[in-house]
Image (cartoon, rainbow, N blue to C red):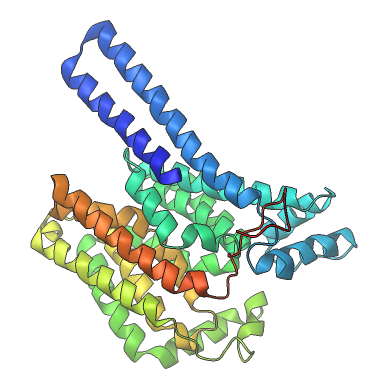
Length: 367
């Protein structure tokens, strides 16, 4: 339903382009206004589907009762929750309400709304980015990792503001993301690299995965040093520090990185010194690098998610450089189907426990 409504929004956007070619004067204004209203309504419908599904879930996602409900109860009992400063404040606010569901509904509203807002800021056609958002497991994963995805959604809008050269809003949003979840500190050096020359950005993109393979011991020392004194210090040497590696993340990010490099050079995008393309390539390089570093960073896959999330925008952008017309849509559909197969075979069967789904109005039912 969400993708269907997003597709209808894209049809309205196409009507705007047609109207600008075929009409003038008052007829143009009427046609464009009607199409814009239709587009915005369909965007709203698309987002609402996802907000309701997430916000009205009950005991769906392992952290629902493992982490968030106990935290709300802990604050009601007079103690503090264990999250980062801004998210602790959010927990404290919702602990004042008797029904825990208000917390999950509000987090769903914020997360989905921010993601849709970020996508709409970067592209007029949203069906493919929304489809990638869904089949990459980012939407369903947010049922479990609520705090981190609130931070990811905040970072995402900050990232889009950065690309529009809105420096102050971008900086504020990045800081808020870090205050929401300390893992977001990993995006700070990435954001600062936006100001590198494109040729240096390209060089870093090539060298980072190589360093990730050869310098794992150094990376381990750096993370232990900077993790000391934070709430993530506990994870080093714990049962979570067992060298776990999700090989599918490595394969996915390696394939997409190779595709981006191919497009970047075959279309000679490097000659244009296109900062946006170079920055997306850098983001993909970081996604691959942290995939390769999973074994030396406890729960290292959680750092990968920040950079993989940007694939919702970067994959269509790079494919647009290489293909047009029907070929462009065919290539996007192939990638979406591959992601869907991966999601069903691997993360959907994993430990996030997003299935079965229980609606709040009928908790005993399972879907």
